Image (cartoon, rainbow, N blue to C red; front, side):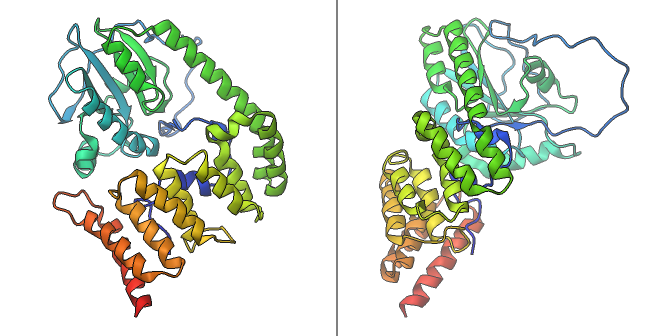
Length: 391
């Protein structure tokens, strides 16, 4: 029985995915999806080399020219003295979906001080794509609590904002300052909180921010270069050699591991059937992820999931990690409670698993809860298993 995507924590995919591309080497959690490729066309005549971006920090913000406003009050123009965030996303974009709750948090945090708008772009061609976006927004409910619009079939927003600024992936956010100019461009999860606070208080320095971003990008490029040897060995299927190479790289660059690439080492330990898997899970849970509920939940589920590639399973460790995740979320996350219940069950305590599972189901059944029916079905199935074992 596998845990469905809607119950799995965001890190789960990263933990289980085989390292096959250099893109994995990016040590930031801020990931992007690229625009779907168009069908090949006849080769055009040679054109002069394309100029650089025409929309940069300091440029006047283009107009918001959308086909339809899906949610919230429409914006006709950027008013002087006000701050705006224009974020580009798509329904098919996994990293965009992961960013939505964060944007909702920002909309609440800066309510009355900044206006956040999500503009759907690059949707896959379909006569009803606008209806598909509207349906998606409706399903998200309060998780997507900010203005939402959709680009027209001509792709005006995609062209005048994304392409004009040379941005090749989504999600991408633009901050429009009080003078109607672009003051920041970047991933919504890569410092947007701090930028907004500074822009609102007139304390933002665009030049310093651009320099800091350039420094981060240079560090990421260096990281990617360092990881090429690891990735090459993993691609060849020699996970033990890749693990040895990772240990060597991380020993020389310890910050790489603690800043996010621990998940690469964990993958390699699992794929190598290395006996160090459980001790390393404990180390990660007690250090790098000790205050990260979703990360703790992902590792706990790795241990208890029957379809996980983990060989030696420490259900006591799974319980410890899940209990910490439950504590961090104040028993208000049904998926995390369900993980804890399953760990309790695997540890041999179906009675306790039933009590915890019932709490998870109660959260799903609350009036107004935006519960995914598949998630609720999964929790009910787990409860049935626990009750059958108790008889």
